[in-house]
Image (cartoon, rainbow, N blue to C red):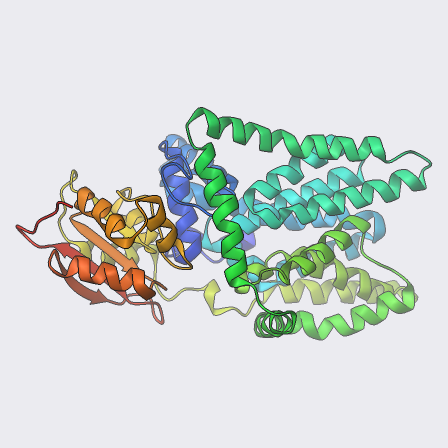
Length: 465
């Protein structure tokens, strides 16, 4: 946690996907219900973790809601390597288990994800490692509960449940016990948070929306993002090569150590890692999808390098630990130190939006950071429009883009802000709709970032459908 704070995390700008979850965390703390009030194609629990911090921080301190959400994820980002240490400790000496935690921190994706804000994958890993740890200690019910919570943060968290289940089967069988009881406890535990969440959605009228968005739309979304196995492997390799050169160089001697020493990482983390590797070939999109590799890589490197030096003097083990600590404390990603601050970002958005009445609606598409800085909630339930979301939204509002923009016209927002990855027929139809109603201006703020388009309502324009 102290190392994270050396990067001044509470003064960072809020950006991209993490900003979407920051915004949802803040609004959930105020009563927003995912799926019913805002479109979401992933499982929602990450927003509730962020919302806890967003609600608590202003109530007990001078920190803002977004600070509170970030603190929760800094805590989860700090806890996960400690959990990996505990998982690896039975199989490794203290220095080796510490090296596993340090190697996990050395994965730049982990550092960036924990620092950038409310990232569901950080909560997925922390809770998933907790599930594996409980399984390794025979607490199978709690293993299931934590695995279920991990999956509710991001669907591939189910890989940790698989790892916990396989570990339970192996260990229970090895000790002459029948594993069925352990599997039932894991399965039952995993169902408890799922049942509680579904009951909550039913009580607030969001259950149907949940299945339409997180299940129905998400299956379509995964299909549109699928690639051939060869292309997936090439894409993953490109990302890992760009982000993790140190880990790649150390992986060859680590693999040699595992072969020579006939050692493998603990069963749970090994199975969970392999399960997630398989999942990447179902759908892989960008670098955040490699965040779940972090504990797997940390365990592989520590176990392999420790096996390689097992017959050498113990001082060599200290060298392994030193390499891990150096790798962790010298991250390379430029994203770790952004060129602008949260304060400057806020001034930019307040300037480009200008004066706006408290009762005037505002709509943003792919710019949740504007809402965070303006302390407003979008008047439209569609936070982004790429990858078929615009077509899904059109079907939900009557079947075509005319009906979708008639809904927007009924809201009659004073300002609309759009950025990132929205094109095609939906964007063309929006541009035609907005042409006579809004004045358009283009802006740029973050170096290398996407252009930000601001539409301001023309005085006297017809806002009706």
